[in-house]
Amino acid sequence: MSTTINNRAAIVEVDHISKSFPGKGNVELTVLDDVTFTLHEGEVVALLGKSGSGKSTLLRTIAGLIAPTTGEVRYRGKQLRGANPGVGMVFQSFALMPWLTVQANVELGLRAQGVGEDERRRRALEAIDLIGLDGFESAYPKELSGGMRQRVGFARALVLQPDALLMDEPFSALDVLTAENLRNELMSLWAQPDFPTKAICVVTHNIEEAVLLADRVVVLGANPGHIKAEVPVHLPRPRDRRSPSFDQIVQ
Ligand code: ADP
Ligand code: MG
Image (tube, rainbow, N blue to C red):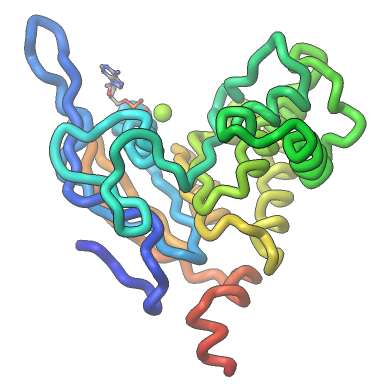
């Protein structure tokens, strides 16, 4: 069922994966059953499903934080073993380190990559500026509103200039207006031709949000989680300008 869209390159391929966890009384709990889909360059994919349908498990498998029981996940054609080197993640509950300042939180991933202090600082301040947090470098998470905290979450992912951005219900802990602002800002960044991230995969249980954000909606059914439908969203997107296929057409 792997799809090729206008010959766009595959970034992540999820190939017939299943995932089981040990359940009560030694009975295996199957959470994902034979899930296959591809995240291509230039697209935003929404994973839409009810609570418990395995969305977070699927996203964490793509990130390489958990291994599938059967099947495989490939990043740029290579089977994942361990953490996916090409992704940045944003979480619903922000997952910030409360004892670290905004800047130190944003620098965490760069630190893990062994990036030196000067470059860390330069890149962190750039990401903080990009996401509208300038002036808050030295603040601690508890001093910030929910919306600002999630901006830190975005800065922490974007500072890595990830090939693919994975977001697990990134707006659902925010009030409606804050969520709308942040969604719009993310989409403006995405539309910029020099935005380094090539694909976005967003988990949501909100059908309206899925349609607003995504070029394609992958619908997960529950018990166990499986792909119920894949629906293209036909809305013109400014970011289509930067897809390789479009460049080829206009040349
Ligand atoms: P969603 O994000 O769609 O709400 P999840 O992926 O979080 O769904 O969870 C799907 C199912 O898998 C739930 O029934 C959940 O309890 C179960 N599950 C998730 N992670 C684990 C785990 N580490 N161990 C056991 N069960 C888990
Ligand atoms: Mg979830």
